[in-house]
Image (cartoon, rainbow, N blue to C red; front, top):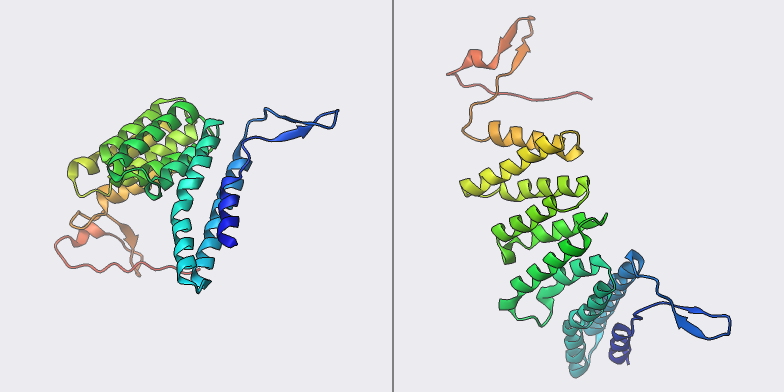
Length: 259
């Protein structure tokens, strides 16, 4: 029966690898799980979920269809436990998955923000130097609605002050600037611009700093109601002119190119 088979599949993940010894027996190998095990578990979860969805759509028996849908709803809870085991074995990306899927588990809604915050704090404490940590930062900012801007910014500040790579620090500053500068609150927007400014000052040669410079110019000089930057050009007769020469008049600018 598909329902039973998928349940067994979800529950049967191995906690460690094993190797053949010289005597023909099997003994546990203390090899630490890593990205490969994480990717395999993610693929297993996605495959199982897709199969359950398909089965529930095709099942004609009402009771079986109901059970399949219940199984589908319970699936994140089952896999959450397996990702938790992987996280305890040192696979930090498993914590990112757990945060992303907390809302699908049986964690009470009122406790979810604190639960996610604790997982983020564990991520920073145990894995901030990992090469994949940008993924954790992106997840952090996606949780703004649950955690609030202030807590997200405080967590990001800890990443920047911790022993993270220069790339991760630059990524965190850029994403903070991106998040906060779009706020309708002037104080929050100002903090966002400040993160862009800090990125440009601390990592001037980084690609993200160059992008931040462009965003800063746009936000500071190219918003509706602001005075347009002066433009210098040459007319069809070869006479130089400036946009400011036409101050007080209606001017239409037509930007075009030929490739």
